[in-house]
Image 1 (cartoon, rainbow, N blue to C red):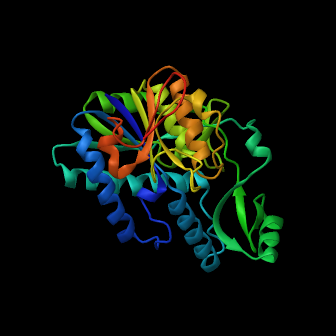
Image 2 (cartoon, rainbow, N blue to C red):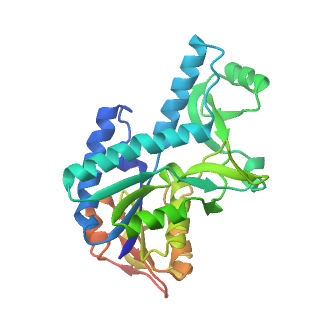
Length: 309
């Protein structure tokens, strides 16, 4: 079975943890154990998040510019590619530490977006460090960057457009056919657009789950899995909450899920199922072997209705 795994940020860094290499490696070791356990029986592509990592690089860039004003911060596409290498290196190293017989390849992947996407007219995705209102206004006056209030501070906001295409799909296919576990589209992929026949970087971020779904369609995956804190629930956090075992896009459309957490994930899995290529699932990384057998997590498939545990 060909499986695309979207690895949530909590698998790389637990909430509230310091963004140290040691903490990330410890979490990645746990992630690698779960993935390695299924990688010998299936073709696996891993798409990981990179939000905290990009934020750290942006802060480091800003700090260095204070020391060396002529050294302008690197653009977001370049920072995104750096995180692909960093997280990919740790993942492929720890996967081989779990099973030395695995062949693993990390591919820096470009995701094409459209400059006409409405997201560019209304940047909403917070990135990078916090600033005072005065400092944010100073930075906006000196550049084309946009800052908005985030609580009592200000942070930079960038567009989050829909992914249109993935440039390196043929390379992903080649690596899979050669027997590799492939790590691709890290952080949603390096955002690019095509201008006069040339690929150029774009200052934006792309939703990792949406890119993973697009990749699953492009490579005709049999199963698309989003690994997060757990299953889909009806009325999560309320006294009558109920864990879904099997769901359908039609059944899920009757519920409202939080835009900042489960909502985009549900949208992504429903989109894949509706494409007719295969099933999808949402579940915990540490139940991955059970998730792919529908013994844990929530399986999303075509049809009607909801089945609960």
